[in-house]
Length: 200
Image (tube, rainbow, N blue to C red):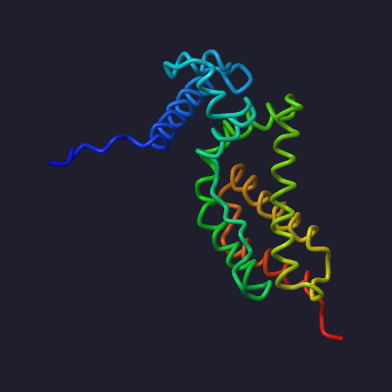
């Protein structure tokens, strides 16, 4: 008779370990702040060794970014779906509108994390590298679909989309009622209209 108990997969254990470390990291950060969230304290809170952290996160920066990803806003920046630029930016705007109501709940740790980034050159460089890759991917998707029809550089368009989106996020954190869905749609429609060449 076959054993009905499945052996736990290594991946499952790794995910549980990562989840426990992230929970412990947030517990420490919520109490002491990002700057004071030491790896020793995080490991102790999780009931693990500091080596367990490095086995799951290559650096402290990777751990902090993983923490933020569990509480941050989920914004889909995939522009590979076929459509006109107006359609693509409208889809993006609609997705942004869906997640904006969650923005006001992020202000405390978001502000503290931004201050920590400013004070940590290694973390700032790490994040800058992540954004560079994101902009390159977005630009490649815009370029692949719209090519010569773009009135501005594809990388500049990617930067504009991100900057406009984050502007709405931060404004929603500061004054949620001042960011109606209509304003988000109109802004991205205007960006799409200006970023495509007009027929001669």
